[in-house]
Amino acid sequence: MRRIQPDNIRIKMLLMLLASIGITAALLVTLYALSSLILTVPTLNVPLAWVVNNIGSGPVMIVAGMILFFVSYYMSTKWFVRDLAKIETGLQEVVSGRFDYKIHLSSRDELGRVAEGINRMADELNVYLEEITRGLREIAKGNFDTEIPEHPGSQLGEVAASINQMSKQLYQSILEERRAEKTKNDLITGVSHDLRTPLTSILGFLEVIEEDRYQDEVELRYYVNIAYEKAQNLKKLIDDLFEYTRINNGLPLEVQEIDMAQFIRQLIEESVPALEKSGMECRLEAEEGLTIMADGSQLVRAYENLMSNAIRYGASGGAVDIAVWEVDGFVLVSFTNYGEPIPERDLPFIFDRFYRVESSRSKQTGGTGLGLAITKSIVEVQGGEISVRSDRRSTTFATRFPQAKANQETKGR
Image (tube, rainbow, N blue to C red; front, side, top):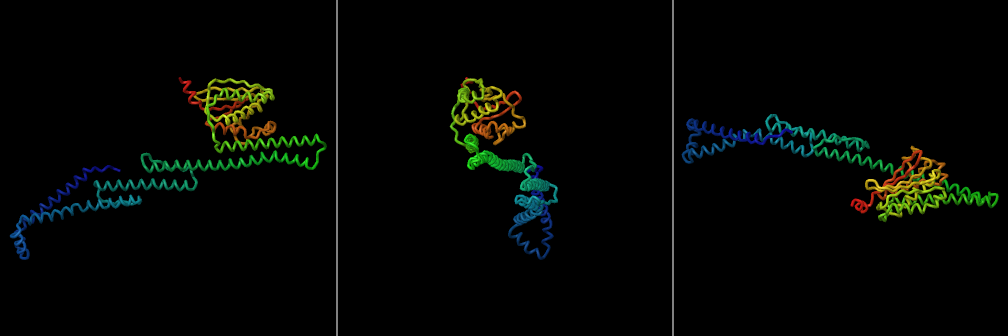
């Protein structure tokens, strides 16, 4: 809107005031000049003569001048007051929300430009509000990719930006809800399948035993042994599922400072029987004095999973290499085995629930498909990260945790 200069309005009011004074003076001079002629009129002679003789010509001229001044000032400012009233009415209509209202002034002066500016502002507001309303209708229909134009430097522009942000967040919430629903359905499907498979085998062998369809005690023991192993697998699956659910439902953590080199050494000592059984050796390369803040009882479960995973799938390589080192304030721990590589297509899903790289391989190793998912949950719930890389030479799982602050300050000094 074009800026209106207040001085122009003041000058115009002053000119109208001076014009009224001039008109009043001219009329008084004219009346004074015609007074002798007016006194010759019989009907006016007597009362005028009485007023002049008893009151005086001076007071009469003053009163007449005041009356003439007010009349002339009213007549000269009548258009100005009318235009101001139209502008006031237009502003009230705009304030009440009727942005299509137009102020019609025929004058091209300052007030006319004020009216044009108000009309232009109302048009812009009306157009922008229509854009916002149209965008809201699209969002209400579910078209969350609708973008309302954002005019910078405008409060309505901030409103449009807020609506766009709200739409994006709402869309993300809906996607997350859909993903959660799909995850729940996948979980139910996976649990049902993994529970039904061993349970079906158990029932099948028990049915053979119940109906005495075995030849001798050796075959009976064979069937019982298979049913027992299937029951053990079933128990492990239930335990893993319970553990995974417990971790993801926000179990309380008992956080303490952990020396990672000592922690991993203890883990290796506990894994010696499994290593010897698989004919493997474990090599450790660790920086001393690196500490993190974590719940040791939970963290040991995660690293036990990584160790058993390296032993289970890396037996053909003959060794497990573990490294502990510090990079940019983070403590990294890696487990590397030299067995069969993980196919590249499977790497993005390796931490998903019930995901198995190869079904035949899983049958041989007896995995439940929850071990790495549990490991990932334990690491992330304590503020860490886990990653995997695999090629023809080796497969490496690595975790990263922020180094304990006290340890960082000591190293800094």
